[in-house]
Length: 469
Image (cartoon, rainbow, N blue to C red):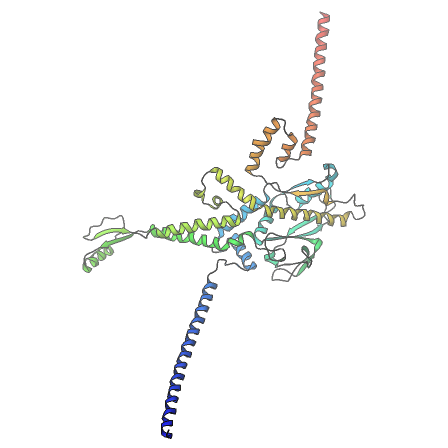
C-alpha cells in the first residue's frame, strides 16, 4: 500500500475520532444541563417545604412571647381565643381551690402545721386571687418559679411569716440549673442583668420551680399547652376576618345593567352620574337591570375551616368546642356535660403538678421558719411538713351524680355510713363536722334536761294544787 493511501486512511480515522469527540462533548453538556436542572428542582422543593410549615412557633421564647402578647391584647391575631383558653384552663385546674389536710391520725396532732399553712396561704393571698393568677402565668410560660423569703414582721400568732412571690421568665429570662444526675432536682435559679432588672440568683432553699410541659431532661424548656395550637388559633382568627370580608361584600350589592350597545351603556352611565342614583330610588331605563353578588362557595369553605380549627384547638387544649363559641356543634345537654369531662381529664397532669408545687412551697416555708424561729427547739416542737398534705378537689357533674344516685341510696339502705358520704363531698372536713355534731348533741342533751326539769316542776305544782284541793 502506498504512502498516499495510508495517509487517506489515517485522515479518515482522525475525522471519525473528531466526530465522536464532538458527539461526546455534546452529551457531556447535555448531562451537565440535566444535573443543573435537578439541583434547581431539589433546591426549589426544599425552599417550598421550608416555607410551608404546620408550626409557626418552633422556638420556646417566640411561643411564650406570642402567647403573652395575645393574652394581653397586643397581638394582631388570636387575642380572643388565647385569653379564653388560658382563663378557662386556669379555672378548671384549680377548681374549688386548695385544700390542706393532716396526714396524722387526728387533726390535733397537726393543728400547728395546719394553722401555719392557713396563715401562710392567707398572708400571700394564695387562698384568693393570687393562686388563680399564678395558674394563669404557668399556662402562659409553661412553668412556674416562686421566690421565698422571710418577712420578720409579726403576722397573727407568728413572730414572722414567709413571703412567696411569682418570678416571671419573660421579664428576667432566668435559667434553672438541675443536678446532672437528677433532672428534677433544681439546685439554682439565676438570671443575667437586663434593662429593667439586675443580675441575681436563688439557691435551692429560696425558690420553688416546676414545669408544665417539655421533656424531663430539659429543665428550661417547657412548652405551654396552648403553644401546640398557636398556628391553628391564628388561622382561626384569620378565617373569621376573611368571613367578615365576604359578609361585607354580600352587604354591598352591585347593580348590573345589561345593554345592547356601547351607546346605550354610555347613556345609562351618564344618567346615573347625573341623577346621583342609588339603590332604592326609582329608575327608568331600556336596559336590563339586576343585582349581582359574590358566590357563597367561599363562605362555606371558610366556615368549614373555622369548625376544623376549633376542633383541633379543642383537642390540643382540652377546652370543649362549645366553650369556644360553636354552640351549634353541641347536640344536646348530656353531650355537653360529657364533653366537659374532657377538660377535667386534660388538666389532671397540671393539677397534680400544682399539688407538688404547693407541698414543696409549704415544706420550704416551714423549713425557713424553723431555721429562724425554732432552731433551738427539738424536732418534735418544730413545724413538720410531713404532717400535712395538699389536695385540689376535682368536682364534676359526674361526681355529684354518683353521690346522688349511688351513695345516698346506699346510706338509706344502711349499706355504707354517713361519714363515708360526707367524705365524698368537696370542702367538708369530717373532723370539724364530728366536733360540730358533738357540740350540737351536747346542746340537745342540755336542752332536753332543762325541758324535763321544767316539765317535772310543772307536774309537781299541779300535784300540790290537787292535794290542796
